[in-house]
Image 1 (cartoon, rainbow, N blue to C red):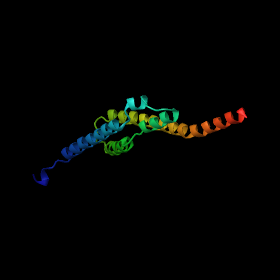
Image 2: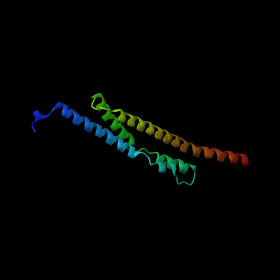
Image 3: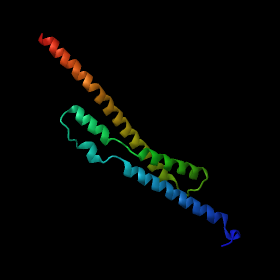
Image 4: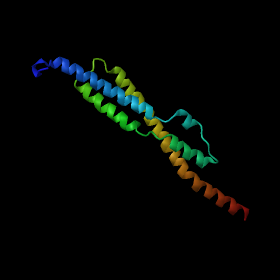
Length: 134
């Protein structure tokens, strides 16, 4: 096929289709990288600190953030190039995933904060009980 047979509109259409597929693939990878709901809910631990540490581990979002970032990069490029006929579904999915990742990150931070607070609190309570029994 000679170069003169390439139609700009056809090439743009192919590129737009490929770009949309890249966004969809990155989003699918991000969804797959999310924590398993059962791992977040079901915990096997001997004490509260163990539960919190298990929860922190279960709330690890792995590569989901990077995959979302990749999807957003491709989406922004495609959107600015006006390459997508209808990008509303992609935009809505990106926003939904972004919101969910924000919620997971917040829960992870809160579990981390509580896990780091509990040992000191326990020590203070132990000291208070010891002081009270004297």
